[in-house]
Amino acid sequence: MGLLENVLFAPGVTDDQRQAATNRMNSDPGVPDSRKTTQPFWLEDASPISNVRSEGLQEEVDIVIIGSGITAASVARELLKGGHASTPKIAVLDARDICSGATGRNGGHINEAGFDVYSNVAEVLGKDIAAKVTRFRLGHLPLLLEIAREEQLLEETQIRTVESVFAFFDSTRFLEAKAALALFKADMPLESKDHRIFEAEDARKKFLLPDICGAITYPAGAVWPYKLVAGIFHRILESHGGNIWLESNTPVNAILRPDDDNSKFTIVTPRGNIKATHVVHCTNAHAGHLIPGLRGHIVPLRGHMSAQVPGKSFPDQSHRSWSFIYAKGFDYLTQLLPNYPSSSPLCAGSELMMGGGFAQGLGGGIEDFGVATDSRPFDFHTKVHLSGILRAAFAEEKWGEEDSKPIKSMWTGNMGFTHDSLPLVGKLHSSLTGRNLHPKSIGSEWIAAGFNGEGMVHAWRSGVAVAQMMLEDLAPNSSYGWQEWFPDQLLVTEERLKMSAPSQ
Ligand SMILES: Cc1cc2nc3c(=O)[nH]c(=O)nc-3n(C[C@H](O)[C@H](O)[C@H](O)COP(=O)(O)OP(=O)(O)OC[C@H]3O[C@@H](n4cnc5c(N)ncnc54)[C@H](O)[C@@H]3O)c2cc1C
Image 1 (tube, rainbow, N blue to C red):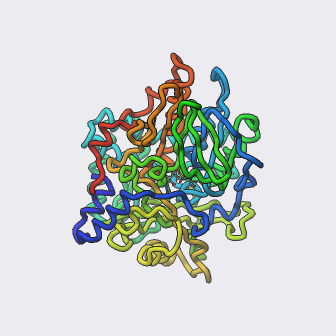
Image 2 (cartoon, rainbow, N blue to C red):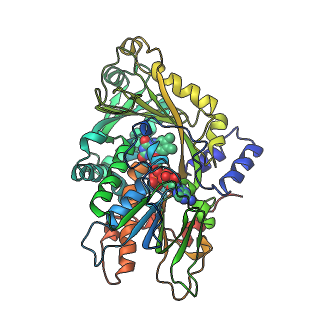
């Protein structure tokens, strides 16, 4: 069972709560609304392209990408990479500022522990598939580091490898994790060679957490996610200005199917319409708005994040990241580098970027199911948890005196969850979009979404895969190689959707 079913059917959840959540989960998530949004710390340091747009929309392009988060950046970059028969013309449309959705709101944690996903997937789908899914996820950190290097964004984005600490505040969860790690080490020795177990006494001292039962460490990544994605878009605009148009604050309200008069899709926005051969949905939590058949399959889920000032004695820990694992639920944490040059008045460097508190929310998190707005009010219990956990978890003598305003910023964001916990990637059948293709039409609609709160280890390579699928469609008989590394289980198939149908 994935997180959705775990929470929906948790003891203590009433029938009324479950039904109300199910109704929200199956309903139209709508278009993101910029009027009610919370302002994330990351976006305070706005990119020069945050609200870029053309004077007028292009009338016709080859490909429209809807969304401008990490998935859209990946699709666009792959399509424009060069070496293709011809370079496509692309319009990227976002309802709000560039990269102000989940990617501009997340924890910046590029975190693939490996052992938990491997053992869960192996149990349901077998070891070979589990190994492919785990490798697919693990491949994100080296790839994102390489792209940041290529685009000369290493310093600006702070992207780096960190020692990630799975810190267990619950002994049962620690025991389960050790069993999963043993399996992972036996089956994937190369990928697990840097994983280490620390029993309670060592772990408490080493990681400054006096109440943990033990820890597992492994390499992971940390990044300023907004700077990475906005930076990549900026570079793409500079290098491919004649082929790509970024249109911020341009919501797509509808898509019309190709008809007798035109073999292209019509993308309807308040600024006018665009015709396109292909449409790529990179709208994650909001995918169900334009793809009615995916309502209930990609479920919006609201998450909370915060930027906090460490206690005055807290030693720099920016070489680490953490997952705090409780009997119920988890939090995630990274720290910004000290003395980081930012134009944001909020950013002084060394901020602790703390997210989670989902399970501590009302009804064990169920009230955040089906919530597709990143607005206030915060869940009160989540807010209390996030505001207090750092000073409660870290050793008092290592934390020291509190800053006078320790919470610099708190915000929310929307993720897209699926019932089998795997992303949905590939070509969309007309039964899902409700737009039958005309015999004359040569294009299709595509999607890469449903990253289950782990877009930093799912989204980039899903975007590359969907772009390569599309390029193969544009140039029949070409082959881009995505099949070698991309797990088939992530493809959008009718069979898969039937197997994981939403409850009513
Ligand atoms: C609080 C929080 C913390 C998280 N922390 C982490 C983390 O530490 N590590 C990790 O791996 N993952 C994390 N995630 C998940 C991760 O952020 C997402 O999986 C990832 O950013 C999804 O990227 P995306 O590009 O698919 O979607 P998004 O970044 O959400 O982009 C979708 C875009 O589509 C636009 N859009 C939607 N509908 C329309 C429309 N009709 N017309 C035009 N535009 C539209 C939106 O405005 C938005 O900009 C977190 C998420 C949240 C909310």
